[in-house]
Image (cartoon, rainbow, N blue to C red; front, side):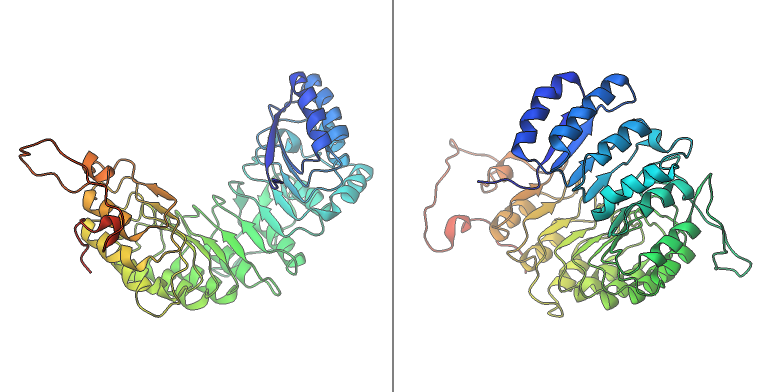
Length: 426
């Protein structure tokens, strides 16, 4: 059996040299280099990495490392097949703003990265407009970009709600510069991760309005200033989205989810964690998402599950393809609401997360075992009302047993092995 898309994590040390040579013979395509620093020892190890592994890898991760600019350039020049590059947290590369400042070096790197389609620059405190422009210009075919938790600056123009013009900055990363990049790459760019960047409502609208832009994936996770109006405008303008992460966007109310259901008919993955204003009424509107297969409602304290049950069982959507559902830390979730939800989840559900739903009891666990027979992952950590007999799939014991408990193994028969469990309310 040939295993593909496996990422090999390789510590950058002299002890790894035999493994590096061995992996080079196997033609691995995804590597992650750890413990990378600016020491001469690290630089010496990178040479055999480039020699033995460089021609083959399509994915290279240096996340959290501290390579020197010289060692980084040397490594990249030895990896001509790269399609994914992760430099998240590699602040040493961008300190001083001189990365790829030499035109000859930039030209050589551009020849190597011409096939790069995915670039991760998350958590870079020293990333500026100039360094971003130099690096991104070396990758003309970028389709996916992450700037998560980079500090974006916004300049509001004289008209309220408009973003004013601004030149590229040598000292900061500006939204104006990012918007210019998006406009230039609109025909190719399909995925943006702007989590934790402080994205403003006006900025989200401006992104949605870029001519020719057809985003498939967008994550403004943790951007707390985003408004329901801005999200509604985005959904209307970028109706081809298949993945949207609005977790932690605390100002959003139920109206945003009505817009999502109305305009994002092809949405497959929706994350709405920590939305304290989302109610069952908002969940009801999600019934229009007929292609949804992953839904995250964790830490939504007003969500009881009844609205979601109504949405999934409304008949408005096709038979539910939902494969993953998280309701962890939903304090309003009770047995009764889970009973109404479970029968409409369908046989496609594989992952169910109910951790820290402290009001759930063994009755919920029994219902899950009875109905959701295709589950492969069930998480109910910190559900303190669960008891041993429920975890073992047994019936509720009598209060005063008069004899030793016996476990009856049922084979076949009418009703199957769960025939004696209490039925769940419809």
